[in-house]
Image 1 (cartoon, rainbow, N blue to C red):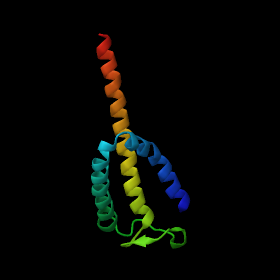
Image 2: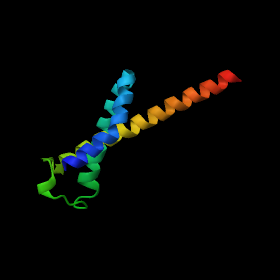
Image 3: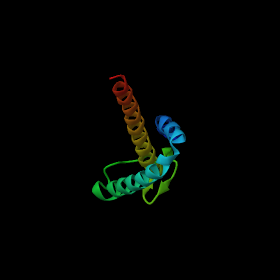
Length: 103
């Protein structure tokens, strides 16, 4: 399962790069990740109990009845999506600003 965590980290790397350049966004990323982590855990535990099956031998560990990978997934995917959104938004604003200056 370590490969899975590495894939998630690989997906989130561009977002960490974005955060390194825009440190003012870090608090909003942390708050949003915490909220999504809570939502994901509640969803997994209450909405669909028993839907997923995990192989104990391949899990890093367990926390409150869920594999640690589930927590990592919830946080890193949230960071990935926020980072992608912020970067695209920033580039579109820059592009729009350049086209307005030429007019």
